[in-house]
Each structure stands twice: as structure tokens, then as C-alpha cells.
Length: 228
Ligand SMILES: N[C@@H](CCC(=O)N[C@@H](CS)C(=O)NCC(=O)O)C(=O)O
Image (cartoon, rainbow, N blue to C red):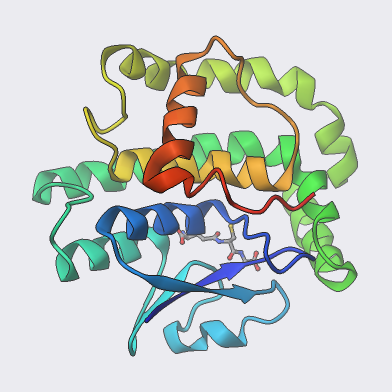
């Protein structure tokens, strides 16, 4: 069976990485069975097969692939049924969209839940997380997260192109969900599993889309273990 290597919290059952969630959903989309293998920040040995320092990593019976977008391409080309992209041009556009999401949505959510993520880790891994992330942020995790109410309006405003699209079609990808949906949704799963901070308003069309995504594959994501 395929193995998907993914970060876990103090609670091994809580798997919160946004990039891993993209692949979890992509595997469900393709109807492929997989085993999720927990990895911790301070023990990346299991990722050596792919020479990776980050998750997700996929081991498809000896074929190792790293990086969420590369894994999605691998799945698409190896298991072409139930397309995630739908053609060469769509692949190029998906790469653009994924990069856009990494740099806007991921970086937008990160400061609002960063202290919560820290609190979900065991002591040793939490110390590593604090050191690396405070270096990146230039201030403490707690100071950063304390101003999250103030960050929320700008984050929600940045999602307006998505809101606009979801007014015209039920999924980012059109009538049915595909990679664009999973690339965005992974970030909401990250926030959902690590934090109780609500990122969306109830009357936001993105809220309804998130509900539809949580319901996919018999409520697969909705059933995911929360880290708190
Ligand atoms: N471009 C990579 C990014 C993956 C990534 O940044 N993963 C984070 C977790 S969300 C990680 O593994 N970090 C390890 C660390 O910080 O030591 C992808 O799309 O897979």
C-alpha cells in the first residue's frame, strides 16, 4: 500500500500539515488506498527515501516522491483516471495557483494560528518549532498571534477572487472538486486541526464551499482528528 508521510502533533493521530492535506484529498479523489505515516519535525529519517526535509512525501511501493505539487503530478500521470488537473495546460495553471495559494493563503493563515500549532506539539518539537518560526517571524509566536483579530479582515479580503468564483460555480474547479479545491482546502484543514480560531464568516460563500469539501468522500475530512 502507498505510504504518505505526514507531520503529527503531540497526539500522533492529529495530522495537520496543509500540504499533506492537499495530497490526502488528491488520493481520496483518485480512490487510492494509502497509509499515513507520522513524522515529527525532529525526526525526518523516514523521509530519507525521498531525500526530503519536508512533508508530504509519498512512497508508492518503492517510488519515492517529495513536494505536494510534484506528488500531485506523479499521481496524475501514474493513475490518470479521475483527473486532478485535466490536461497539460491545466497542469501549468495549477502550478501557478498552488504557488499563489502558498504565498497568500498559507502565509495569511500562519501568523493567526502559529502559537496554537506550537501548543499542539510535544515539548522537544515545540522548542524546534518556536526557534525556527520566531526566526522567520522576527517576534514571538504569542505576540504574533495576539493580533490575529486585526489580521482577519485583510485575510478575508485577500480571498475575494475565490469568493467571486464560488458565486458562479460550486467548486474552485467547476462543477466538481479537483486539485484547485484541494490546494486551498488543505489550508483550512491545517487551521481546523490545529486551532479553534474561526477564519471565515458564516455568510461567506467560502464557508459553504468548505462545508461541501468537509462532506466529500463520506465526510472524510470532517472526521479528521483535531489536535485540541
Ligand atoms: N513545497 C513543499 C512545502 C512543504 C512544507 O513546507 N512542509 C512543512 C510542513 S507544513 C514541513 O515539512 N516543514 C518541516 C520543517 O519545518 O522542519 C510542498 O508543497 O510539499
